[in-house]
Image (cartoon, rainbow, N blue to C red):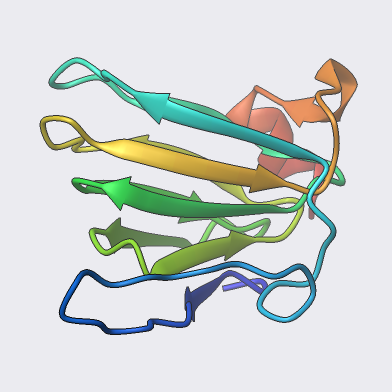
Length: 133
């Protein structure tokens, strides 16, 4: 699926509680330029619904669970269930994504390779498919 990868992040197991960490370039191929999170998503709602021209992203379900549906530039779609805080879904540019099926108290962490730039977003799905063929 066009470079989309489910990354197994390091886990340090301890009877006092477990720890997982991130280190730029050791686990994913970009420098973090922006961090944001999604939370309190009402039942039945979706988030995302766009692609990026250049930006790369890593999505982690820190708490609870949600699904990420990814469509590549050829129209192939794969659904990923994120439900463990030690898995990150890496999304290279030019992959359409939306998130849904949020559990109660789901918390999604998003690490991005670029600062917010509205011109980098592709928000029209038909345009996305036409500009990538």
